[in-house]
Length: 254
Image (tube, rainbow, N blue to C red):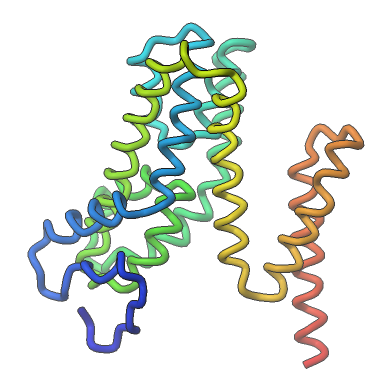
């Protein structure tokens, strides 16, 4: 590991590969980090609920497992299966595409941090596929402490481990769905937005982040009660705009 790297206080980060280690150690370290991440176990609970939803909609267990393997984004998967049950393939594709757009800024933020000048474009396809909130949060937290030549493999290891656990959760939820009360199935699906909420709150370090987070959290329920169909979008737009305004005002006053 580079001598100028900051000390790592988190015990889960102490087993990261040192500088000059064989190429496979980055993947192994990422795989190990995924199984130690609390976010991965929140994913298991989320996909247990998703597996039960697939059973309720009449989909096969293989369909449910493969959708998790190839999509690996619980909100997009829920949109897909519910839209397929009520709409056309075109509508389902459009809805999933719009949901996936939210991940593009995460990909743009992560890939420059893990690539080297000699990194081939095809080597970035797999880490780009794995980008979801859970994998992205852990990669941004740990990858800066990994030698740059190991970072692509490290992120692939995190994504592989989280995908394995998500597929296992999907299959378990599907097989147990007949025995799960509907309230419990809904509760485990609710783990995903709660995980996003906690991750966002933890990452809000600047005044603009905090203002945007607090106002969005305060305004959005009112918009929902008022009957706005795009309440979440409007709440995020209003909170983000006011957060940016607070940042500009603070800079002007400094």
